[in-house]
Length: 232
Image 1 (cartoon, helix red, strand yellow):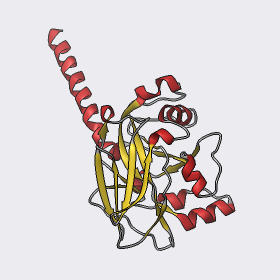
Image 2 (image 1 turned 180 degrees about the vertical axis):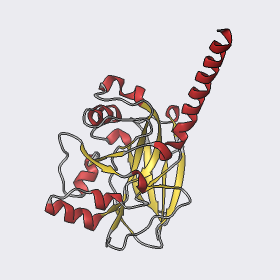
Image 3 (image 1 turned 90 degrees about the vertical axis):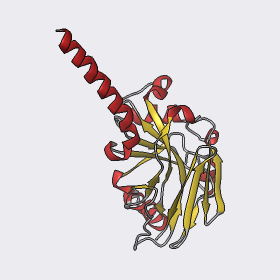
Image 4 (image 1 turned 90 degrees about the horizontal axis):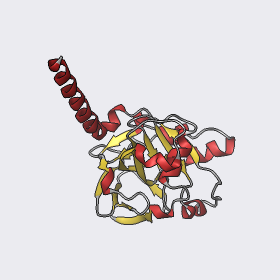
């Protein structure tokens, strides 16, 4: 019996260690990317849109993930490709109908992400009342950084920036979000059950604009990391 107990404790310890390591591999096992649109007032304003009373949600497929070292592919049906830099939240504990007061307990860590958008296709979709799946979902349309430990990021006050060929295009702070991270987690989990490894994209600050083939996007979280992706 003692031998069995020791083996059980050892197995539990190994499983716990594996789970901690796994979150660094969230791209491999996360099941969905839930994104929030118009979550910065200045971004909504630059597109002539109102801030909504509730989060505007859409999904991106996990096949759109792109790790650093890869290249953003400019789709043949896209005439205007836009960048959007965002703080990504990595879900560490699954749940449904999560209370806002408990939402941060479900966060494993963070990442920096780009919500690449075929803007011409999105505008067509909006005019026709169609979903944004095509405009947001192409392969390579979610470039994302490595996992960032939860303790390193203050989601209520984090500076995000993006440059195209060295020229600053976006420079904003998460304190300007309309809906903060705990609210988003609670709101989303009331609709979709959130699972370990899922990613929540929290919206983009102002400065969104086009990027062309042959250019390079560099984006970062001030004092934490930066990443670079060429567009081909």
